[in-house]
Length: 100
Image (tube, rainbow, N blue to C red; front, side):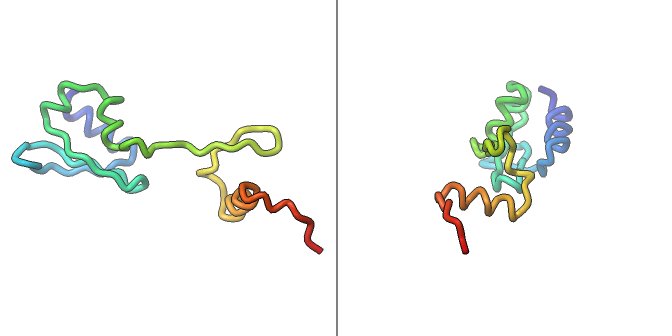
């Protein structure tokens, strides 16, 4: 993959990048603020690999979507508001009592 294409894809995915050296190797630092991850890629590594391989090093296995099934359909919980997430936590605890 060409370096300029790599940088453009990183920007499109919301990653922050900066040029820099790591252990004497020129390259690029890429970080993902939402996942709290960072990685350094040498120019050689960028040119020898495709995007899925490079992205795995950026996300470090943390890019997981949480999905749940409530009222008959599946939904990603990342977009839920605070109250809805709180309700889901109560369901996981098994708090199914009727309050008076």
